Image (cartoon, rainbow, N blue to C red; front, side, top):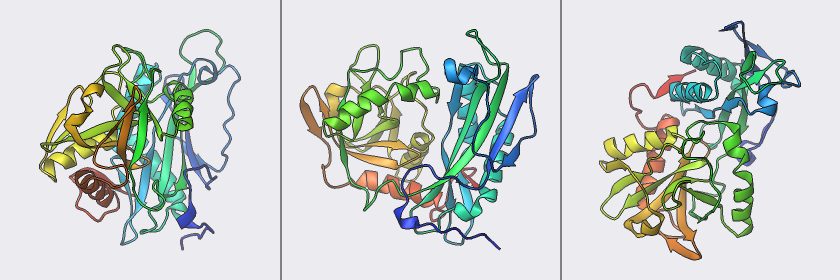
Length: 340
């Protein structure tokens, strides 16, 4: 009998809530232990841990979805595992075998099955895997020990009251250096984004758009999400850069655009002075799937795409298809869905 929890599923936010179990595994003497579930949501680590002083850490984000027939499924967790390992490699942490990563995700979801929101609520169970450097260390060098952990939180639909376009503004701040950690999902990238995000919000925008750090002429990321645009001749375009985090949602949308919507798909430079080539634009990531972009302000001028109030038809089709795949209502490409 599945345990019941007293949660108002329709009013969930994207905020922390302690759930019953989380997974933790420790790396020491050159190997990971078997890992285990624990009820303790407090990490006990050395005050000299490299994660605290030198930013030796990385994380992931993915979701579990309840389908119409009450099954629970994960969306492309193998890709999250691979990306976690690329981040680990960048900041010199041991890789987590993808099989171990997927198994840990499944363990956490099964142990917290009663926190997976019901089908039709729009809510999901968000999983936050992370790896941190721990142990006694003072010099700038890799940690002697590491922790791999996953916790989960039920979260509400990103769009309260329906998906609607929002406006963004460009920023003079850089998200990452040309050959820095932009491709890795490390905390430092996000700490550096807090100030430009706050500045954009104070100006009345949803977030800021980061331009390429070398020339400030090309769009790279939209806040913590990837950018895409639909050209007037129905091409799906998304920026190509070594500084961009490779979004699993973006690459899923690229496949859907090509195979489901029969659009031409290109990764290439997106010049901020050439926004009029797009009839629609959006930002994509795990939390919202797609955030439609109404307009982009750059150097005092606001460029509006399809509309500031209505979602473009191609963007809507992309969203509906991916959302349907994730919740089991649309047939998924082979290998995308892992049943828990």
